[in-house]
Image (cartoon, rainbow, N blue to C red; front, side, top):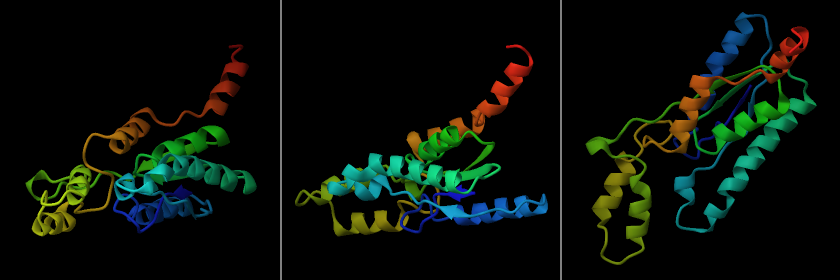
Length: 187
């Protein structure tokens, strides 16, 4: 069981709780879940400074770490849980590399704030802060208090929410099982 839990941003702060429920399900079925956390970083927090240079590299690091965990300890299967736009594809890539039965649990999207405020406004606020007279301290304070009002991925239709929907709708193919079936059927 691998999640992107971390308490540095709203997109991952709740994932450990979701995986607690998944672990209970594994125990109920006679399995022994092993918990791993490879946290992600937030694009929004990285905007406006050199931190943005590490965002894509973090996706590869997450994928590599999951592959390491799954290769060192030969898992029978995986349960993955993520919300954000680098951790979801990282986990799906790791599942493809490890080629073992996998269940993906989407972490979901956060609620909108008052007046339909979303995290999408963060970039605009960040830029306006850099220009004298463009934004008031009250606007900054109001956004900090309401812009990301709950855990989950950013609420706009971006990569994070789209990847979660796609992973849930399509499922994660068990290519090893399909290859075995094709071999038995002469296909």
